[in-house]
Length: 223
Image 1 (spheres, rainbow, N blue to C red):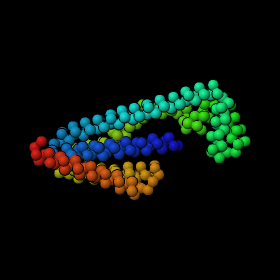
Image 2: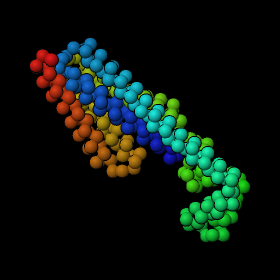
Image 3: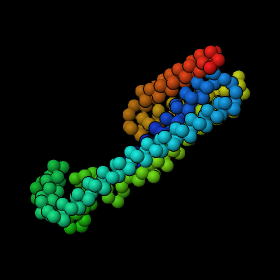
Image 4: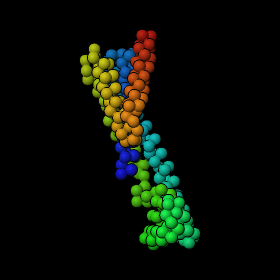
């Protein structure tokens, strides 16, 4: 359940990043030009660059985490082979620290060791499930997809409506989406929804306002 919540939280945050970064980009370009083809090109470039960057970053991060987990498991496997008695005593102490009496902790440690010593130490001592190590490819794919889904909203909102309405449609749809992702992030936290939604909306609105102002100044200057 905890792993699923972590994945959901990461997906929501990835989508949120896609919404904000792409919205800032296309609104900034819209401040400089109203050409639909230019807006589409800029939006698609931002979507691809952002999703690839997110995927690559997540792959590197999770690969590092997985390597650390594998190293820790290899060391634990070696210690269990070379010092089984000391490892049993260590596991007993860890179980005692969790509130078990000495006798119960010793009995539990012996039973866990007899069943699967490595799994017992991995879970109790290292906090690792050896059967569910993080997968960097899954993490990269999930980040790529989440960012792409989020980025599609401002991209479609800026290119599909008529020129006179596209900015208003984009801002309204982006702010509505940020309310949703802020609420979802708070619910998965869990944390109060109000502050999370407010931070999300204010941050997104500020990003769009700054980039639109910059785009308008550049467009007026003929850059």
